[in-house]
Image (cartoon, rainbow, N blue to C red; front, side, top):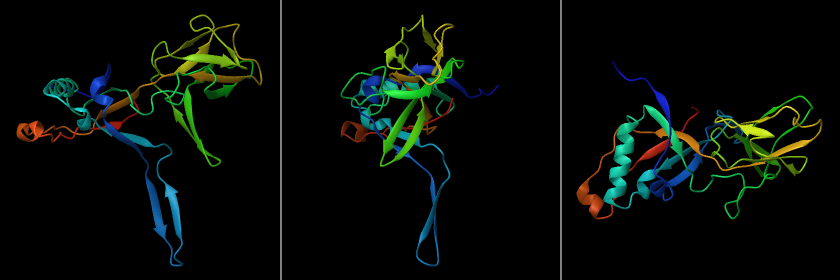
Amino acid sequence: MPETSGFDEVVFPLSVSLRATEGPERRTEIVALGSGREVRNTRWADSRRRWDAGSGVRSLDDLHEVLSFFEARRGRLHGFLWRDPIDDRSSPRSREPAAGDQTIGTGDGATADFALVKRYASGGREWVRPIVRPVAGSVRVAVAGSEKAAGTEFTVSTGGVVTFAPGHVPASGAAVTAGFRFLVPVRFDTDEIRVDMTAFVAGEIPSIPLVEIRP
C-alpha cells in the first residue's frame, strides 16, 4: 500500500544546512486603483521560510548524505527538522539565549501554560512567530525577572509549551519571559534531485529546495 505522510523528529545534516541559502516568503495581493493608488492585502498571517540546501553541498560525501536523507524521507512525503543558519535562537546570534530574551505572556495567578514565541519588531510594528520545536535543554524561563529552574519549577513540551509546576504558577501581572534555541519543521519542496556529475565536479551544485511546514 502507498505510504502516507508523516513527520520525522530528525535533523537535516548540519554541515550542509549551515551553508544553505534562505529567506522568508510572504503572500501579498496588490490591487491598482484607477487613481494610481494601490491597495495591499496580505493572504498569510505568518511568513513561510524557504531554503536551498544545494549551496551547502561541497563534496561527494555531502551529496551522498543528502541523497540518503532525501530517500529516507520519501522526497516531499515526510517532514523533518532544520537548523536555520541565520535565525535559530531567541537572541541575536552574537550571544547565547538568556531567560529575558522574549516575552511569552503575563501571569494571572491561574494560567500554567505559556507558548514559546519569538517577536520581530521594527518601526512600531511587530510580528510574533510561534516556536514549535525548541532544542531540548536550551529553554531558560524567568518570571518577573527571576529565572526559574527547569525540571522542578517548569517543563517544556516538544511542541514549545512552557508549563509551570503547581506552586510556581506566575502571579497576576508578572511578566513571563524565555530564551531558547529552536529548530524549524520543514519538508523537501521537490520529489526529484537531479545531479550532473560532470557539472558537480566543475562546481555546479544541484538545487535542493526546502520549505517550512506546520507539523
